[in-house]
Amino acid sequence: MKLHWQILIGLALAVPAGLLAGTDAGLFGVTFHQAFDFVGTLFLNALLMLVVPLVLASIINAMAGIGSSGALGRLGGKTLLYYLATSLFAILVGLMLVNLIEPGTLDGRPAGEVMGLQAEVDSPVVAQLEGRGAGEVAEIFLRMIPTNVVDAAAQGQLLGLIFFSLLFGFFMTRIDSPYRETLTNFWQAVFDVMMRMTDLVLRFAPLGVFALVARVMAETGLAAFGPLALFFVTVVLALAIHFLITLPLVMYFVGRVNPWRQYRAMAPALLTAFSTSSSAATLPLTLECVQKNAGVSQRTSGFVLPLGATVNMDGTALYECVAVLFIAQAYGLDLSLGTQLLVVVIALVTSIGVAGIPAAGLVAIAIILAAVGLPLEGIALILAVDRLLDMFRTAVNVFGDSCGAVVIARREGEEGILQNGSDAASGSRQV
Image (cartoon, rainbow, N blue to C red):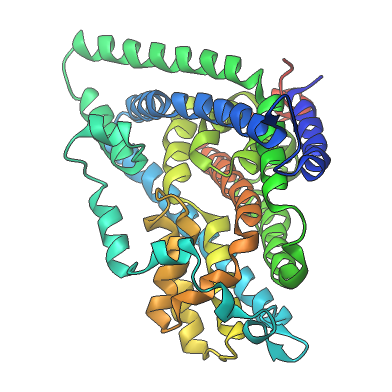
């Protein structure tokens, strides 16, 4: 059975298993929730174990392949333009839907009154976000140049690791032979080994996905959907429009490829991203799917995807915009067009700046709320469904990265991408 079908079956079984098990049911003194948490964490740790050496090897190899600074500038410019454009498209879709549906208004009254916001203000998450502001974004960008690259790798600060890898790979091509060839062969060997280790970890992906999703369903259940159903639907609908319409149109008109083949090529990565809620943890599988299934070169994918997993967050940017306007509606505030445009700009910046922080979406929302003068306690409104929505927006983030790799590869003149007869046409590999 193909890998994406195995993962999909695990995902489908996880929902009823988690709902039935809850957090209390168990056997022999061990709850099912604890078992889900153990297996899911084990799988997630295995994926995260691969990320640092894979990022180093993929970017350094990509830089070695790019060679000249002119090619680097061209590829980097196209990558940056794609990231900014698609993130802006995502935010505008969210802005349009949240104004159209108005999820922050229930029965003609602000949702904050209907849901009793004041009773939920003392959330520990809200308290943790106190004091977050625009300086947080500046702090993240300072981490782009780490004082200790080993410590940055240990802390999972991918932005600093990527910056170091770009410099190392660039200057590696500027040294004399035979040292250049030695380093090139070494990093290519590291990359090949990491991809083989990825193959091994992916054999356990269906079990890991099952455990991760079952744990979430056991913790959250479906009770949270009641008062927040309209907000949940608004976010998911906006993400679906970006996922099913905006990105395919970009692929068709800019990349000149059949976008529907991309869904088949990326199915294992998308399902894994949904279950892990982490673009970084999904990166090993994203690289494998883009290279083996979509047919993108290691040179392009090794440069575009690690960068995208760190700074390109279409789904997160969209969510930030919808959440802030929902909170404003819940307080009965009608934000002007100028204020909404300010939300768009800050959402675009913060989706890049805070991507490496745990609960990045909530931190970004806190920054935007402070910028437009809304109380931070409004975050309490969305906490109940934030974890579930995080799964959806992470899948959109990963798909946006993969589409970027395909589009940029096509603009670079690569052939055979998402063509019939390739792995992309036949779907994901079998395990």
